[in-house]
View 1 (cartoon, helix red, strand yellow):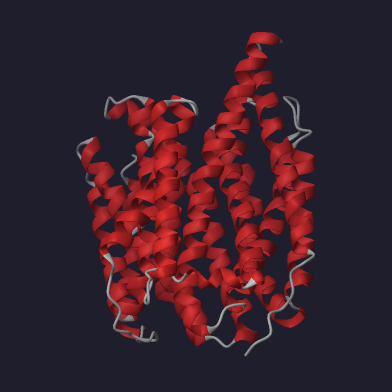
View 2 (cartoon, helix red, strand yellow):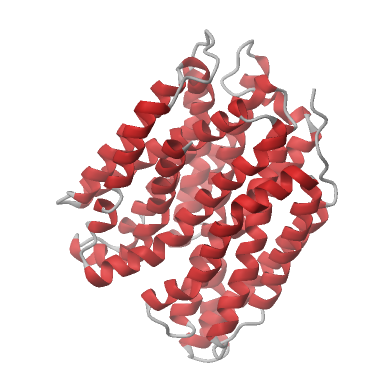
Length: 453
């Protein structure tokens, strides 16, 4: 587990760490904002395309084969990105990095659900929840510190020792735990899945830059949606589908998927919008912004294993419902923020928010997969992981677009006050987040512990 979780942390850290350096990289490589954004968009796009395919790969290849492929891709991508002399090579490194993470995340969950009995999975998934939250949350803070003291290359170089640790530990201790089946990879399913998930993620990712009504955005989302419908129809008619959609016949699985979508939509968009609000509305430096958000992230890391054990002891509703309420309270306070908000209020609210997200995130995932029979675990994991990545990409695109639209309308109609305009845009984003958080509170009331066969 150490080998898998450390590699996962590095991958998720890399997902957000480079965001803080995009402005500097745009000048270094002399490319515009739309082009440099591909360093983030390309990462999401690769995850959206490859995660669904890992469901079938985990049944075809052994645990060790999948792990070694994942870690070697991560190392290759990181070294290529760190040493990249041009934008094209840096982007290639990011895509290869993301390919490694696309294998690691479903593989880690599959190992947890294979080696831990149901009454211990909450604790194990709590530790994975720590990794899933700590990586993206600590990324901007540590990257800000690196940029203040070293060059952007070190955002990649500092992760190499951790990846080498994972490689050595995994090679020495990771056994084969999955059952290998004789499954064939259906080429048409892979193509439809790639066009489907790739089209949707690409469309929403570039919408913030070129507008939601542009032909490129609407066309790619429409093509993606059609491909997904065709993909789903094909899966239901195949004897050995690439992704077994029969998992959706279990109501608790569907409920968990919807709650996961809302949680990731809110969480990943918050990790982008909140720093923008602090830097642009309160005029706080990027490294200080990272420090303000650090206590909430660290507290979450410390409490994640405990939350997992509480899930095992008291059941899902006792952990998930209070968590959704904390998230809603956090958004309620955020939506009242303005240009004169005290910094201590941001710290306290972020602690409430991250504690709530920590209680919801891993617990919902555990309960969602516990509701499936064992033979559906690889499919259920691939489905939930894909939906989470797509939710994150959509959340960031939608919320940043909402912020920009409200900001522009404020500047045009009210006053030419840039800080007030960003505060108004952020408030609208937080109000939308509050509505989604309240929906999750209601959904959490229907969660129950699955009957184990």
